Image (tube, rainbow, N blue to C red; front, side, top):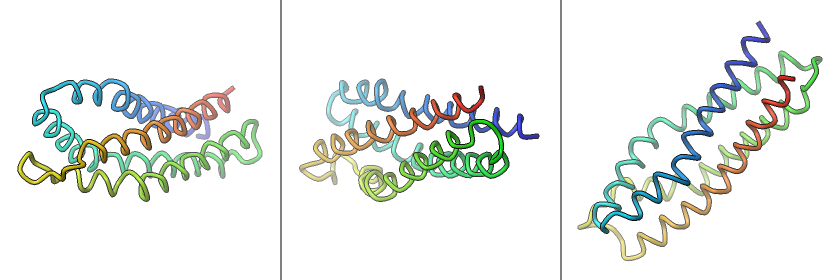
Amino acid sequence: MLDTLEVVTTVVVGLMVGVEFSVAFIMNRILDALPEDSGQLGHAHGGRMLGALMPFWYIGSLVLSAIWAVAGWHHHGAGLVVTAAGLLIVSVVMSMLLLVPINNRNKTWTPDNRPADWKQQLHRWGRYHYLRVAGIIAAFTLLVAALT
């Protein structure tokens, strides 16, 4: 049973890393290259779409990692799993305090109501997102290392 939990957790976190990496290094660059209104509308739509999904994915990943840490406490790699869970906690807190407030504003913007500093706000979100991606990549790496 622990083996199944380990694999499921690693896959769930790995897929989350893939989505967030894609947002950071592919989707945002594509959207930023579009003409101003199209790019901004794309960011708003992505904020609504992923903003509805990602909280469950982040919390689910954290819960799975915590269960693995508890269930595998006396097994090899438990410290790695606990550290990974700690990084996932940091990513959730960081999301709630820094990224979600910007995303909540962004997802309501249209070309008619967006603030004058909308690009600066999206760039700030992007910088925070890069840090979050680094943290979840580190967590994923630790989970993979704990499998061995």
